[in-house]
Length: 327
Image: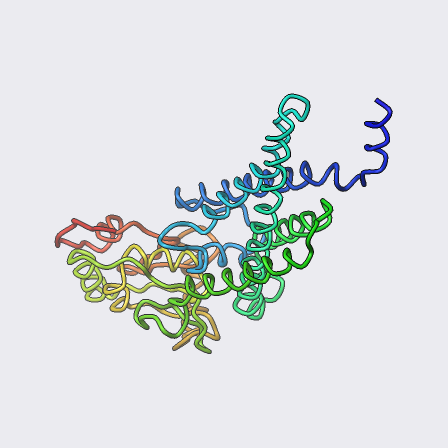
């Protein structure tokens, strides 16, 4: 009994509490990313405190392999929570050898996971500040992304100080390998974003920065609908940074969106027509009873606020063509 008490007294408190702390952070991260994944899959807006937060979460950077990036974050946090808390479920008195083995291997997995998550989060912070904060200041901060980066860094620090590592040199070597692999993988995943993609699918600012990439293709019905909208003089007032405008173009698909008659209202957008947008705002707000926002449709002299389904656009414009829309 006395030896157990002495061992507890000589063990630093951070070594005793590191696993529960990592597990708690990972569970919190899993909850947040699960919420973001649910919001993205159900096509609802996350509760963002700033417009920039919504822009980041709706951008092409938030999608990997056609799935929400938050889904992969959820799986990563779930894995970290399992590695951190799993060994604690094994009684050291009943199965000491298993507990010792699990403790050793999961610490290495925790270090690898936390290192990879920190590097990846660091890259996303670079994207956020260079692409969004540089444009919109503090309004371009995604607080969910910032929180995730803090969580990853905290878990990384805890894995370093949370136990007495026997071979620091080996740990450093493993860390360097993980950093290199993560960087290469991250750059490969996002290599399609930027100037190398299809220009017709990219939504850019006036200085050429890519904010969104349209991924859906258009069917014959979508193309015919846009041609009809153009024939009746319909216009979509939008801004390149607007996530809902991106969602509207995603519904139309790449081929139809490139033919769409849209008015760029952002002063620093491509072919900006800010004066025209300012001119129609009073009438648009009077008709809709809402504050002017993006996108706003003008169809047959009437204004409609927000993203519209293709069926509704067809109804509002009197479209008589095929309606087997695929998006």
